[in-house]
Length: 593
Image (cartoon, rainbow, N blue to C red; front, side, top):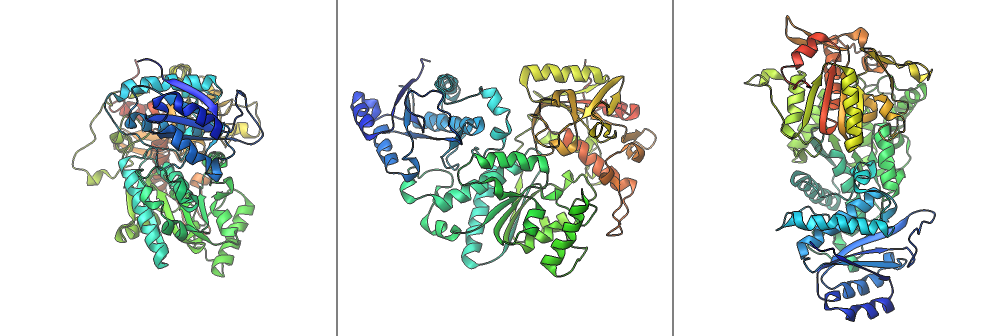
């Protein structure tokens, strides 16, 4: 296919008036255009803060530009780039528009001014042929300074993966639509509400949380004159009455894990309408003097019950927040109770099978939350697997393989299964697995070693020491708790559950340590408590008088390895320390040749 034409002109009435009569396609042909606030001819165009960009599509580009001139949010823009192709149709333009918006948001050089409800991923005739031209358009825009990184670099970044500019799966779209309908109904009637979104690893719970908040702030702030596209997925909600219902409301996103929280804050910093301060801990919400209209709680299974916290100051805060909110230090109160006390509406995104520490909310409490939401018809399941290319069956396969599913409810035993197109291999040498991870890093990037917490963290206080020694190979644990995957030393290190939960990798090499073992006589997995070194991962809860048995610990450790084994998009490699467990897993994981 011949290349598309890209015309660049100033974002002024005069420039558009001169350009419009130059060709019939300027006023009567489907095109895609990019507006930004770079000065004409200024390729570098970097200034303090962020440049702004808007991507659109129209059948009449000249008329659409005149509409944009009247928009207060776009009067500071300086440059127009119009992308014209004689083969373009409406579907191809919508596809290219979404392609560019997603990549611009992930590149991070611009703040994307678009709403996120128009992002599409629809099929149409000859789509693959059209998409071949999209990469050429990207390359030419990159040479012109619009993009700063390659497509693989952008797609491997947290900014891209956590961006609110996503095309939703069908079950995600159903959830968002149902939540909006119910939320507006409750806002109108003044009714409190609790909603639960439930899904396995990789079904896009965090994507829904971020998408939903961006959508709400857009509904609350978009002027009717800006609604050029009336046929988007959620366009019916961009209505003056809904905008009025959201007026002045206070939203926040609660994220228990430190690393994921910091990554989302970076996304919010570069997204109009969102702000890093909207991303909070449960402690932030509990201590705040403000009341929230809506709290969205991601990874809600990682909220804490009363237990020994990471520091003495947090133990003190737990008590003080209880006293502040409930008048006394009721030790039965959890962070879930705080969030309910501090907000009128809550949306919990959870997967109870990803609880990994005794301090996490107990399964019974999470189960009660889910049952209550189902009873009120406010429960939304996510099933489509967005991360692991092996498909949704892979997650269930891994959990059953580790005994993390309740086999008593299943009529058939787990049978060996191959996942076409997914690189799932068991290694008998950790050296060979490490070499394969390094090869995949050169080939596809975003390939890392991970492990269960089966070795003490010696290097935390002495950087010269190694933490993990397996088959003569020595490794150190992650040297940072935040954004470890993108850190310079991550290829030389091993990541723990606390650095990767909620994140994607292209390839994951997972070391199953001596904390998880297999008894050939009983054919059951069991825990070696002495080989598990996450102190807060196995300590009893003296405050609540709870003692955690080996069976309790087994559930957490199984969950940890199930999470680690579901990080890889394209493949997962496994090395097992316990010989009996390795022999057991040979029946379920293809042996690396």
